[in-house]
Length: 293
Length: 293
Image (cartoon, rainbow over all chains, first blue to last red; front, side, top):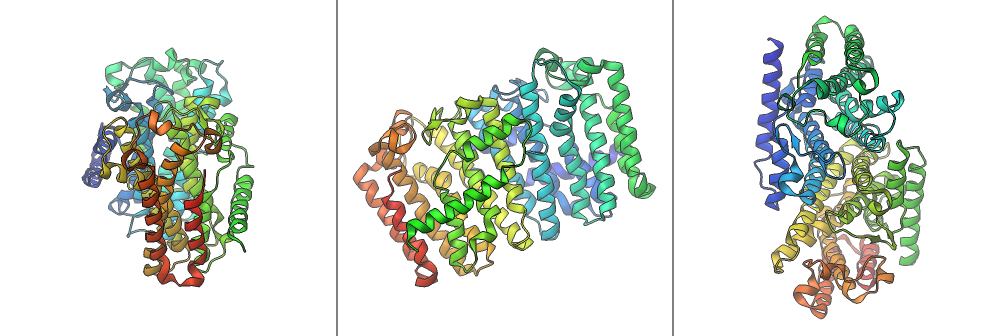
């Protein structure tokens, strides 16, 4: 199967699962509406797709881990809602639509985020197809990468560094934690849920770290070179907020080289998995550097 | 052991565990500081103590479940931080000290809450003394009670009902979900972690539901009859925000009767557990109706 079709197919099974999951009523209605507004606002479903790709690279069938893959998307969605809040990045536009708090107000947006984060752990832990030991190991990985050893720490550093003189180590901390950690965890969780060996887990970890960081460097570049229409969010927002970014520190050309080098490192990391297991992950790595939004 | 000593002893082992846990460095510093500010702002540690009491009623030793009991306190703490935010209840005072966002600003307060919620699941899932199956069942209970089938749903209903004409079913929904659900879960998790029988779990569930709701009714009463100094939070805040409360709907005297009836129901629920198992839980139920803050 061609990569494009593969990605579309995996995205579709994740979205079908989420659509079915959110058919249940949520009280009060406005809370459910706000959660669904952001979950179904589009997006690449990158983290679930990566989780499924890693799970399948380790010999599993993606259909077996839809609750775990879906949970990654709920956590990603919650992080976007909270990041966009007036007290944080104060964004009006996300994926070409008004941000959650613009539609539902700040209080409901905060609670929709809290609800998605909490429900992610419920979704993740509800599965009859995966062993309790593997699910628990996955929850440990997920909660580290989404929290103090990843996303929350990265976002906190991002917020407190706004307008400061860019520093390489601060910038790396932000990007590794805010973006790369959950992408890395998505891949590792795919491996963990198949109960694969430690060597493969380490390969997935380094691959995830590489493509995760590359993904954010490309994101920084697109914020400068893309259009608001292409991006679905306000172009140049990083610069106008005084955000630390790769282009701000290294310029566009050097940032492109850094992204390419990270992808090479990621590809090297999964070399030991063998061509048959690794080929889809290799295709995905190359695809991510070519993306425009 | 006298109840007062029992509660103090359990509170102390929970606080010692949390103090040790948070010795590790958290980056950025301000995120760790904000989290610790609220975790160590005092409080009764009611939810962890109830969890331990239920675990011990079912034959376990509380020392074995400190990460799970501690996780309940992290979730309770996160909920207070987010509830106090300007977009929510806009409170300046909590446990006699300035609220988190008053000290650290809104952005860091939101992230401190997100960090505590996420870390709670990491803390809960990290244990060598409890089986993976029991931990997973505990996580399902916790994520339901803290999220869409409890606290988040209750807080959302609370926020959207402010200033509206009080309705019995809305008020019950708020209190059952916002407060009683996590208290009920604390007790059930104590039972779940000992892998006790379904009948005992149901007893703990109904007991928890009863004392949880009674606890909130008493809280509503104290908001009217207590002083700001006694409460550690602004007296009369519910009324001035047009919150739906039991005193607003039923008056003080009738609310006291409702609380007493709920405690009776709770006591009846654990009767089948037998005197030896149930006696501490009975003492706690009676104690909760007598509290002044």
